[in-house]
Length: 231
View 1: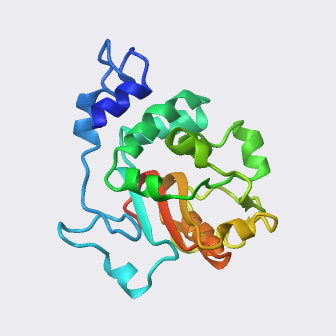
View 2 (view 1 turned 180 degrees about the vertical axis):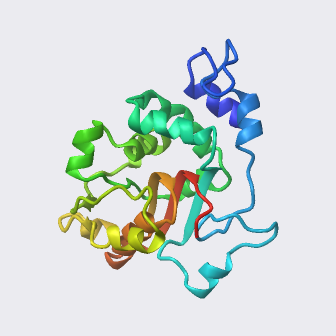
């Protein structure tokens, strides 16, 4: 499945990771080597032992989302791929990364069952700085017809989460998101998929999910391309 999805998402060329030529942007051998599925908590996507569905932290304090799915561990070579997408003006990478995310266990089903697919929005300042929203690009490649960018709003600009300790990350995004009051009735009883590029502590996705839950969303699944091992 990985190979079929990646072939459809890539022009023949050189593999970004191993430099094989000719090859897809992410060749099948590199995907098999660096993106092998691993057991993860169904609620926060942290690695767990085989056979365990939820980590202890989520059992003690369930997050506001019903499920959380990721494709890869946020480590080399994916750190380089994400950096190229986000900071080196290479939006074309969104297609092969989205294809890899779509092939991750559970993602296709979550997308098929979703009424709305909502990319995590950027602040006006961050969007002007980058020129595009990587999460929105991923979402459009995953489920273009159900992507909505007018429901979940970023209402407060915040410093980048990278490098902040967990407590500061949680504080940093508090109040950063809001549901568009004109669109709020459309969320009642709906199944929502939240999309982001990288998940670290999950502070941003949790905050956004809590806002959507309070607005009436019935089921929320968060998906991200990569996830660190930070609790």
